[in-house]
Each structure stands twice: as C-alpha cells, then as structure tokens.
Image (cartoon, rainbow, N blue to C red):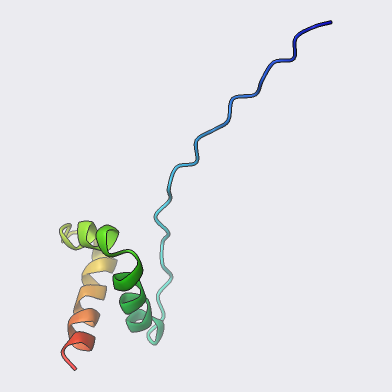
Length: 66
C-alpha cells in the first residue's frame, strides 16, 4: 500500500477589503469601521496617501463633530 501524500493547507491571508463607496454609505461605513476595526483603520489613518481613507477621515470628522 502506498502512503497517501498529505496536502499542505494554504494559510489564508487576511485581505483588507476594498470598500465601494456610495455618497450615503460613506458615513455609515466610516463609523462602523471605527468601531469594529479600530487598529486597522488607525494604521490607515497614519498613511495619508491612501485617498479613500483620507476621504473617510473627512467624513468622520463631520460625523464626530455633531
């Protein structure tokens, strides 16, 4: 009897999802993002060349200012 080869399990890399923004969704996403993925977002906030996050940051400022 031949020994069966065990398949190597591929490690799943965590993907940071691209967010399709919608005028109305932007604020909602922004707030949800802050609550659930604070660290990920913060690391993004520290990267000012990320356009979408920069845009979201402006939205967040507007929402938190209320």
